[in-house]
Length: 113
Image 1 (cartoon, rainbow, N blue to C red):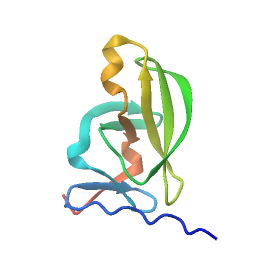
Image 2 (tube, rainbow, N blue to C red; image 1 turned 45 degrees about the vertical axis):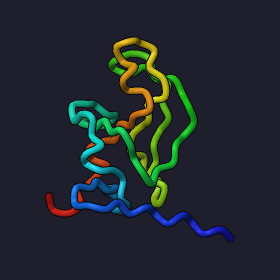
Image 3 (cartoon, rainbow, N blue to C red; image 1 turned 120 degrees about the horizontal axis):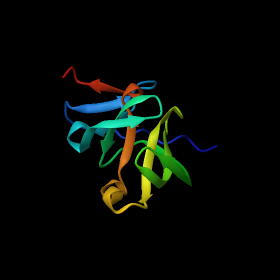
Image 4 (cartoon, helix red, strand yellow; image 1 turned 180 degrees about the vertical axis):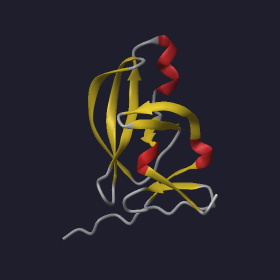
């Protein structure tokens, strides 16, 4: 029987972690913007997120137009954290491609900052 992967530990004091299992998810320095809206409230746009599993690609009509996205799940606990932008169909939205939306309610600040 295969063992589940060991979650990657991020180094440093400015780290976000999954609000359910506390697995490290992202560095504060990877935040592009804090002014995004998720399914359930405020969300962050990140350049990179770790310890995640991606769902299948799907086209979704979002507030800023049509995008191809993949849901982002915490690998250790399966928590739905947000989504990854695969394709933005409007020219002004192309900067989102390859980036991640993580719902603010789905992450915690680690390290007491």
